[in-house]
Image 1 (cartoon, rainbow, N blue to C red):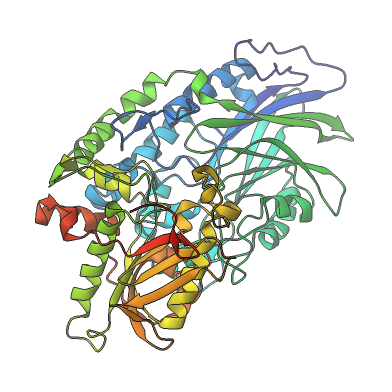
Image 2: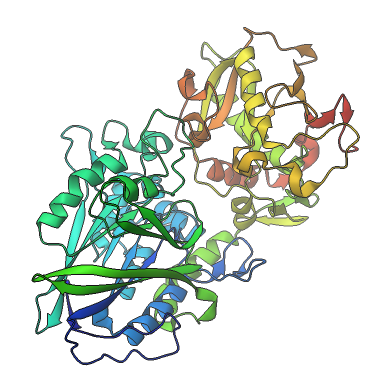
Length: 589
């Protein structure tokens, strides 16, 4: 969109329903103007309403829809209702990773090699975003791909707290000021500050270490908001890729991860924070700024294009300046509109290529393998991941000083819906099992550290007394622990006693039939997210790294399946852990 947006003084704004046309009012003596700001976030490569893992239109139990094609239709309706010159559109990050579409244009036909326009840039440019902010997943495929995408975007890409590790200067545009023209009045200036997540320094250390630093969100906002105000901004927005609960998944070594509400509370001069990262739906939340006492509005539009945040501002002319006198927001469900045929047509070639790629058969499975019970049972389908990781690290250590050490492996139940069907197994099936773009490392841990790691992981289970009924709905995810933070360890045997309190659950930890000793040395195959501190597991981020060839685990699974041609659990399934209560198995074998 153009940076010059024309408004009519006194223009009315319809209610947030999309069916009523917006009719501009004549100029009112109060000199009030109403504007609308829309925001998406965490699109994660969802251009169309399509599930590449299921090979079908996207659907879930709540019948949500996904994709920028849906967002586009809703944005067009709101622009028609309000008047296109009364509106602006922003995004709060995580665009370049999440679906096989993103993977295809990062790894199979990388835009850094082909020079092609990234599908997500193509779609966002066509929709007409006014600015987008960097999410942590923008860094997953490296700085060259991110740089190419930034150049392809017509909208400015913001990230004020991502700075050069050498100069300390912003590596991306910190903010943008958009000018809205008002007929017969002074223009309205809307300033937008973009903040990304400090966790990038951990989660994508291999891509950014020594190149970028990620500063505290609050401190960065305190620096830039006055600059934006001094440049004449009448409305100041923050687009932040950070949740609003003030917590961090990586401990206290870095600035707070989910600092959106903290920014609103501690930094004067902000009218609203449009945030993402947590994948929650927050239609409207007000936070009181501790310095000014002013109410700051926060909103988050869920994930994947399922919702669009819509914020209405009323501005009045006071002493020759525009002042925000009212604000409200809501989230709109994109399942109420059809996909924009313009975006669907624009995405057709990229979509078709991706569908062809994910449906390529790579192996035959001797039987159906499901991940449905993986969160609470040792399942063959997760053992497949363990087998591939163990083999890769073991082969890499051959001939090194650590070649004689036992190699263990960790894996988590990323997807409860993953299935290898009996018969042909495709790229899509494998990608559905391992849904993240993690790379593989090998680290050294001793017996005590292994025990600590497993105890920390076991907090995932609720405490259930011996003899009490088992409710699968409440057994797992205790304390809000997500499935991807429940790591299972292969290569050793152990039980988890869920009748015991957290920290006292791991029983009978053994290697080859003998109890693991405190100083016994192991190599552990681990993904980069976990090794870099993701999930806050003990010891792993400071452990010696003995293998790091930047091998993508998902691709390793695909190549292993293609090389063997057969997936037979008899060759890799090895039940080595189970849930117990006072030594009695929770589930029958």
